[in-house]
Amino acid sequence: MKIKVGDMVDYHSLIGGEVTSTGHTVIELYPKPNNFGCDCATITGKSGVVAAAALTHSVEAEKEKVRWYYIQRAGFVGNCLLWWRKGGNGYTCDLAQAELFMEGEQLNELAKNHDLTIWPKQYIDERAALHVDHQRVSVAEAIRKDRVTPQKPPEKPV
Image (tube, rainbow, N blue to C red; front, side, top):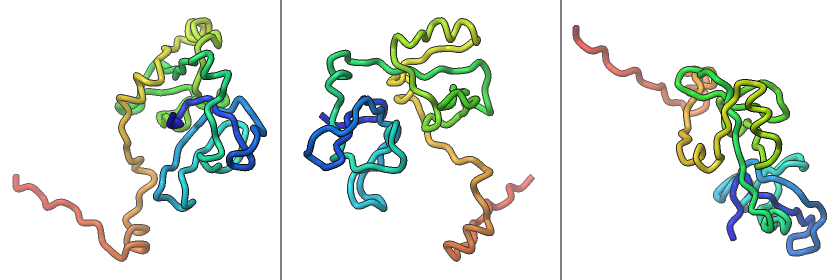
């Protein structure tokens, strides 16, 4: 079974060896081709990137078939929803920075006390779209790195 973001996994420090740590959640996947040369992932409880081949589905999670949820705060930034940020560090529009909650983690109580909405992860992930933050682009940087000048569209006649 293929590993996906949100899956509960066990980590093997030697690929194919014994489980060396358990109870991790897949945060992000980096499929080949990438700078690492193999499918990789970031997981909770480990810093950096690990080889996806070093991960197996958690036996406990498979037994329980855990459902995952995002928590949304009321309001928007532009047309983006606001999500509870990992570690309770405010809110974010970026799903990669959003905290994932397991079913049964007192979600209803949390949402009721903070005017939040609970969304199934699968439902939101199916509707997510990539966007570019205007603060992360620079014409000067693009010219320097790519030696190509981004073109502005021609003015429309009035």
